[in-house]
Amino acid sequence: MIFSRLSPLLRIPALADLTRDTLLRMDAETAHGATIAALRMGLAPERSQPDAPELRTTICGLDLSNPVGMAAGFDKNAEVARPLALMGFGMVEIGTVTPRPQSGNPKPRLFRIPEAGGVINRMGFNNEGHDAAFARLKDQRVPAALGVNIGANKDSEDFVADYVLGVQRFADLADYLTVNVSSPNTPGLRNLQADEALRRLLGEVLAARAKARTHVPVFLKIAPDLDEASLDAIATVVLATDLDGLIVSNTTVTRDAVAGLENATETGGLSGKPLFTLATERLAQMRQRVGALPLIGVGGIHSPQTALAKIEAGANAIQLYSALVFGGLDMLDRLKQGLVTAIRAQGKRNLSDLVGTKTADWAAGRGEI
Image 1 (cartoon, rainbow, N blue to C red):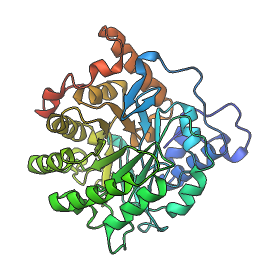
Image 2 (image 1 turned 60 degrees about the horizontal axis):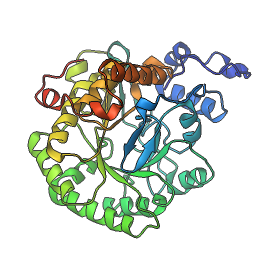
Image 3 (image 1 turned 180 degrees about the horizontal axis):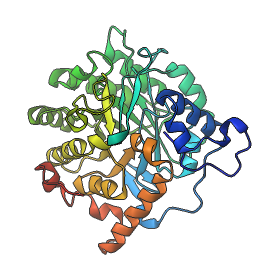
């Protein structure tokens, strides 16, 4: 992620020139590390005024000042949840965290596709593990909905058991949990989206949630690379449980939208602008299948118009990350202002009045921005 502007409190020479363009000249993972370091030191701009009342959103009992969240993948180790919230995100999702620390895949493993506004990653759930994330979060006061995205260690003998451990560890600390079974960078992980495997996973995860002191909402994050039969199967399983919602979607392994461009042949998941249409169509198709079940739309948001399109396709709230690499952190303010403008222009009182108004178009491949 990249700063397009930094706090005027910048005093450290090494960070004084940490602009968006400077970071784009760095290796992608180095730039990401520099941004995390800057946030940890309090060098990010903070929200200057309250969010407009039209943006107030309730999802799964969580009251959000606005529906725009930081997606998982940015703050893998729960280092900067509070600074992100202070910048104005309505929710902040850390992780993915696994029970044991793991180094992830060999570097380089993060690649930009500048011409398309895309990013490919094959990070491989690199993180410091449950204990490190828990230790940081228990001491942070995060003025936004705090999500913890839980995953499984690559060498685990039982992926489902790892997710249960994640629920047990974070259920009483997080405002919501996300079960991430859709990363393409852990071999075999996406198989948990299949019918019987998903039944077992959700059964054990929700049983563990039931034993927690608080009833924390649980979301399932799914891949965009699913055919309609797979969407049907997931919807059938999910609606037979008390799962709270879905996050649609993770990165894609397809490359049609970036064919022939720099880094397009790198292995991993593609995110950013090239993912927008695919992820939004899957979002709308799941909305048609799950009725009023809460949905968080993520994948390819890069402008106020695309943020609005996610809502109209069926999202109750949205998340972004990759587009900030190219658009800068002021994109957050631009998105929120754009949503307010759209609400007022259509004579609505709240963003919720726009949810799903164009689901049919997006589900049929006729969506426009």
